[in-house]
Image 1 (cartoon, rainbow, N blue to C red):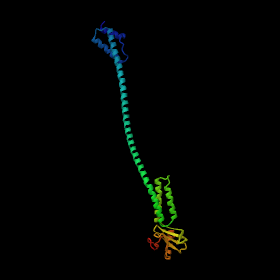
Image 2 (cartoon, rainbow, N blue to C red):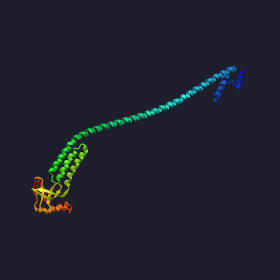
Image 3 (cartoon, rainbow, N blue to C red):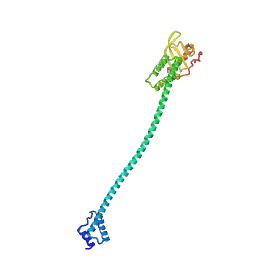
Image 4 (tube, rainbow, N blue to C red):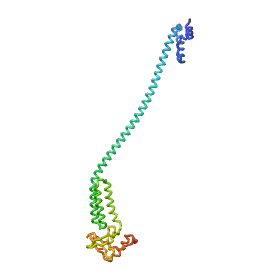
Length: 276
């Protein structure tokens, strides 16, 4: 029997243990032909043995390829994880830089606030004595000013002094109260006012009407219009006016009470320390 016959015999009887996969069967068949062509004198047993070796080699190659494919997939997965971790690390690094910048800015704000607090303490130490001296000056001003509403004004200054000593009031609140008191006194300089009140002069108590022209002059006139006078700043006393000024003073009182239209009035204006 020739080698070709042996090959056909082996193929007919199924001596070749070919793999069920088409690619493996084709490779085994081609290997069988190649072995027969290079060694035509081989017997069927020897040819089967050669084919077994080829098939074993193919299985090993398939297993190796499977391992290579698995390693390739694992490598791709690890590479994706690495890229993801690298991207996360970059984000984390950027976030860390932002936190560092925020921390630096906050430290700067804290230092600025500490400086402001220190400055506020210095200002508080300086402004409290200043406010007390301003209250003292306001009290002296009221005492030496024209004697209108004097009891009310002095009482307001005393209450202001007491409120400035309250520990529950902030420095800003105390300063606001002080400015309000100064503003009230300043407003008296721009207003004209008429009111009734008692007058004690030369040992006599009278019920009179007062006329205040800002802080420029202060007059009085008795209710029967028989007596009139003005306040002398220099002597700090009431000085009687001549009867010739009574009518002009009465007209001025009506204007101040809004009982008459404003008009040009001839009132005696007193020079400091002088006579009308």
